[in-house]
Image (cartoon, rainbow, N blue to C red; front, side, top):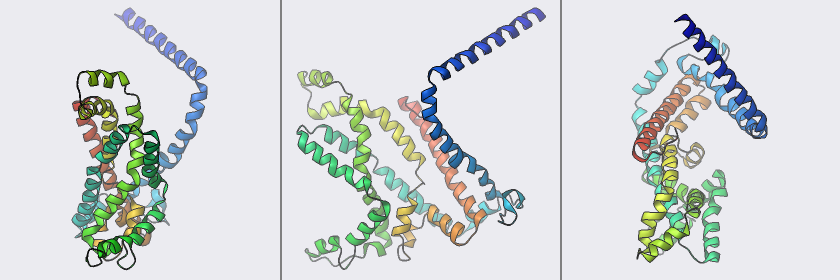
Length: 319
């Protein structure tokens, strides 16, 4: 029995040495690829992973004078304070509703990509692509400035247009009921063209022979889209859907903050803006860290659950 154990140890050692040698050979062979990866790895290590130790201030009463490690522990006090606050459900509801509204617009880039793929006139297709891609390159600040200008109740183009039909000017950004629609739909306009690029790339890989065979069999254009094009992009749809659901509560802070005002605060106050006010403006560092950590944990749970469901249903997943 002892001899067998010794033999197994020798075999395991030999296998370990062989794996180590293979790894070294791969690194030596593909060292250029590892060098190319190094900047990205270093970037994420420094700016994403290293700062994560600061999360512990959510469980402390952080004092800049004492530092992170020297500040006293308070456990889940800050979380309990947030959950018991009168504004908790309002902030959570706004964040979830805006996130869900954005997620409901997920099919728009897919529909746009399928539509563009059916355009046969190359010049018209290029013009359409340029028009739909262009808004992606507009900065958030410029975009919000455009939205405010377009929706102005006195000089905005939207109010001037609806005024032609006898409709009274609407103060869109002053009425909470309009905020979510303005925020989400302007985002759809800005991102749908850029989002369609991935799907168009996948559609470009579909063999023309499949469409030719389907046409010979009498399939209509709609049937070819449903049974050839859509199945071809299902893996990409699955991955992007998982990522979008994992970011359900990570709504764009910059855009919301720039469009926010005291009159629409009822509908525009989300977790990100609340963290900014309490953490930076009111210097409640530990409390804001706890709120931000709560938001991140919810996103993580959603990501894991949706990844599991998608993996079981479509066999496509992040892991």
